[in-house]
Amino acid sequence: FSRFERAARDMQNYRHDYPVSLTHTLFICCDLYLLPGVYITDIHEKWYGDYERLEYVHTYIQWLFPLQEPGVNYEASTLTKEEITDFLNHSIAKENLLKSYKLMLDFYGIVLCDEKTGEVRRAEHWEERFHNLNSHTHNNLRITRILKCLGTLGYPHYQVPLVHFFLEETLVNGQLPNIRDSVLSYFLFAVLDKTQRRNLIKYAYLNYEPKDEFVWCPKKIQKLWSMQSKAAKEEAADSLGSQEDTLISDSEAQEEENLSADESCNSAESHEDEETFSHNED
Image (tube, rainbow, N blue to C red):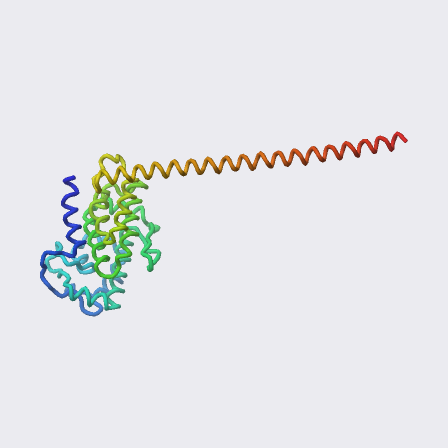
């Protein structure tokens, strides 16, 4: 549990609106972020697909995805409550955040396929980018920041699709083993909606092995989910069995119908042969 405890405190602090007082600083002005000498449009247009730069430059992520907490870049400013309100009422700022999100998704080998729902899927170049993501785990911190920022600045509905994507890739598809713990300890708990977060934890538990090492929810909840899963599987098996029985019964009924038809045909043919034979006799 110790590997999860620190993450739990950090993510709870984020979800409960940062009870600790933070320094209020400016971070945005119209259509540019205040990264000295660099417009946000420069990053969107000139950095897109420049994976070397996106990987090895470490000063841009705090500007593209600002939070109410300080990051490793001491020059990057933190969000204030007033700035959040201004941001949510500023269409250009929200458009810039969406462009920044697409930029980073492409960097990770992911594509946003529905801007309304936030649904994501693998990009065509996913294998190359997954390899990079799996071998450069500092990106885990970046993704956590992105998820937090989405929740704070108007895109909370984008959190679940991205977290579900990473749960599926790590736990179901067996990809990205080096980021699995970050997905479970940080990505998942960045989701602000409690019901959706619980559903994601359940999905994670049901696909996690070995289950006795799952530490991200109480054991009594895990036991309940295991019982529900077992019952659902038994019900599905019974339903499948009933369908098979129905198919067999329908098949048998069809066979009987065909047999009756054959017997009728044979009887008619026999009668015709008798009539022909009688006619020839005459």
